[in-house]
Length: 602
Image (cartoon, rainbow, N blue to C red):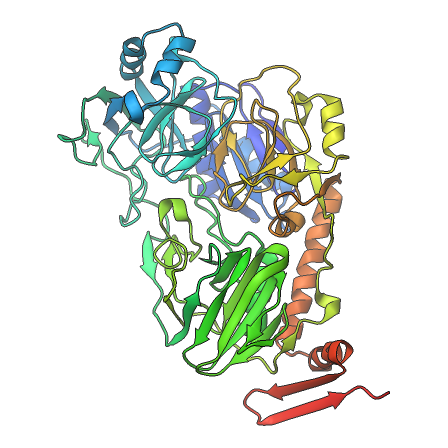
């Protein structure tokens, strides 16, 4: 067997490349390695993303023994290694080809010098293996297409592909279980739902299953269920179950105005990328943790994330609020309160977080967290699949937020986060990055310009990907890569040369080459850069990236010590900042009946 290549993907992941083809042999190698790491976990491994010919391993670089990982993979990657794949199920999927449901059928046929009927005949004439799930929850990467249907991806990806779309690109075909952006060619549509959020087994297909397509004229005679052509036993889903609801505590807040695109988020769901489920969670994980700590919660409790404008909330009972992230001018009953900071609300008080004046994403946490729907153990809202948060969607006006299940320690006093613990704002942020696993495929002058030019994000950016302007990255020559696992922070480059920086809701598997990867410590900065605002990329070493992770952890630990009131530093720091800003400071200490007022003399 050809030795595997180990390609770093930032400081926290490695792409184990067994080849760059689509074949049963490579698929078996990938699944064998994935099974070995699942059955005998390596300390520090966070997630696994199997694809056609590669396995992406996400890990904690501060704890992982890299040699142990290589030994485990090497043991599995032998021809005589024990491998027990589940028996495949063969599925028949009905497809309505062409028309409005398959808008690329005719253009694809022209590009291939075929008729649309010939494209349909070739597409339905094969039985395809499910090589991997990725890109979207339950999305099957199917191969191999007949050579006559091989067509590169679209030069400019669509911003939105409808759920149910059947598409193809290069040597692969697939079905979109939920709506996602994509550069694949849309041939048709199926009524079959491959992602079922209410089922114990949300993902219908599994790697090694087989799929064949059947052309139909309408969906009237078909249910939304794929037809299993054999009697294979459907394997059980290995996970925490699908949807659950937090036990709701007392009602805390009524949403008088939701602000802009306000979602319930936490730190995301890890361990499910192999099913195509994005990690998701807060765009600015640091700000979410700080808001929770200021409210007295655990770091990862469910909180509100808003873009451009925060919500207006009415207290239905006494509670504590933590605010962090983008700079706003929050007002409690019309009076300005600090951001970042914490504030105590009595029943009837109204907190208006307001529009951002610097940054983009603002976070609001409430004591005890927010009772929410959980999917695979996380309350993170993932709108394309309608899971997590409150009904899997944005918060609506009039919604009532109840207390969640977070462990809660009552804060001691209202006030701002000390200046010494705040991240300094910058008019031109610098994001540190490492060269990507495919950096050598790009022209050297273009890569040099990437790390020296002023860049910005375009308005077409969202929680999936941030589109860059200010740098074009042409490839040395046209390449075709078998789709592979990706990570948040990866800078993928479609054929147009205009990079897309993957964000929180990014897919688990992609096919565009990766030029660079923003280091984990700087990902929260992405969430606070407005479209059009300038920033730069700075190339660093892996050692510098790992050191930055340690510094970030120590900083968050300092915020936690302050928020929990450990030591005299905490109370004094709050008062010191207020004195410096306003000349006087007042603080009341919850549960003690004690309040103090200090004025600056002179």
